[in-house]
Image (cartoon, rainbow, N blue to C red):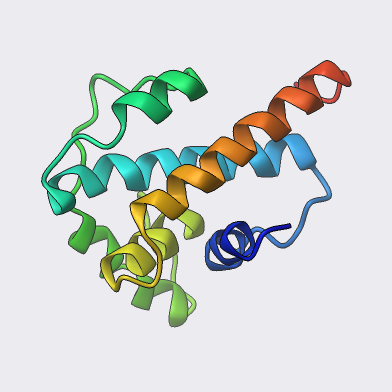
Length: 128
């Protein structure tokens, strides 16, 4: 596994792969959510090409929160509280991106790997 991918997985807390399909899909949604938030932060739409490759579509009825607002929720998890609207992976990836510990390119790379992985799981009949 590449160090780049391993870093994203570690930040997102994806260390329990008892359910490979579910874990990969949840992490993929976390990555997509953070990339959506990052658009305003990087001042460009960075999602068009990866979302097309991943066949991911934004939820039309939900607004995209500010990256810094979601990143600020990392303290909730550190204190053992639950950040109501967001998963651990989404919050921690947003915090890492906001703190420039990872880049949008790192998230896109990890998303591309996860897209290939989930496709292989589908071919093996291990999706649901």
